[in-house]
Length: 519
Image (cartoon, rainbow, N blue to C red; front, top):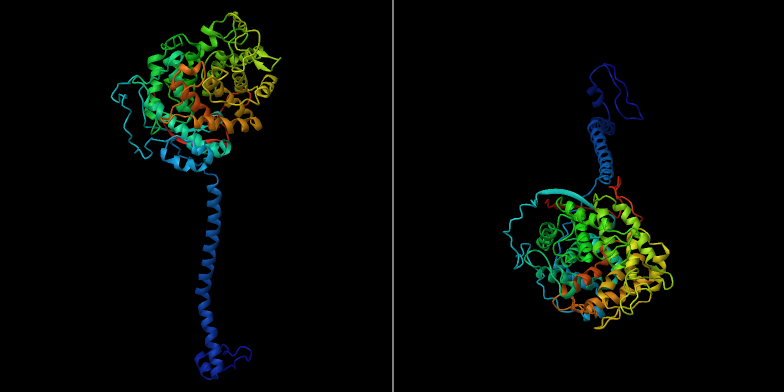
């Protein structure tokens, strides 16, 4: 048998035609060890290499899969479930934001803050009452995007807006608002309405105001704590109060009531999309459009003859028309009426003192001449109305804001304006929409004043000479609405345009999953 000597460099037996074992046993010990080591490595390379290869492959797959998942997640549309429920226990967190000076003067809060979800209905509620005509359903789930004007009314929207615009006292203002909502809930009448006192006794107007107050806080018929209250208020306006000609049974002929109730129904439809609200709201808004004068102004009785142009009445009609327009109301001439209303406010503007007149064109009563000068109490009305209509940069608005820039709110029994809560409702919104130093100064004084003068039961008592007999429903609604200015209408007013659903989501849009109550 022929043998080959192992290569010195490798120390391994060379290949032979015979049995390789013979050559192996002829090697020295060191050569044998090297040969065995090499053979072992040769046998291990296959499995080890396979394992290493597959491990590397798995790592690469995991790496690319993770990147794909990450990219995919960024494309997922997340629907945030935000039921808008009011949790009174959140007051403890809110009060951490209250300035010490404001906190010291807060009245005691007697409302039970740990009420369970199944809060018992109010004493005057009638849960067994048959409302079959409205056919309320709570099993319909639908996504609703609050955009533009209403983007701040979800729970998360309120928190964000309070933090951004409310300042250090936002905890106190929100606490005061919750007290007010509790008081209004407890004082709702059996038929779903509210009634004031004196000239504010009108059920239509007070129910509209109260409903606007709950809606401003994002409360709808599906809200956990205030859903029943809101539902009964809507039912009263839709089923009991509304007339076939677009007016209301309990309005007592008041044009303020017409505007306020129409405004409330427009917001209710915009926030709930309850089908049965829409035709009633459209009739009411249609009556307003039909009662506009050729100058764009409005008068008592919705008289179209151009003999008296009431800035105060026009303010409510403007708010109602803008809310209806945003809600998608189908009312002939609505857009044209809003455009014409701008001219109505402009002709009521007095260039001499950069303020608005109350009711020029009206008859002279005693020494009072409506054409003689301006009325400070209605100037914020004209300013806000023009802001709502997309004319915030017009001279009437900018000069008007300058004319009231140094106003100081005073809580006195004999307020010089006669209607302080009414005037402050408009003033607060006008300053908020304009922003800047005037808003900061006003908010720092006004918010503290209202919080400190809230009654222990959560209501407010009117303070003006003329408002003194209007009662706490009136006072509570106007005060609470003023304190919700931070999120009620976000400062994003633009020229009037149809607000179509965006093809791409914007950062300030809030998607919420809601339960629609279908009437």
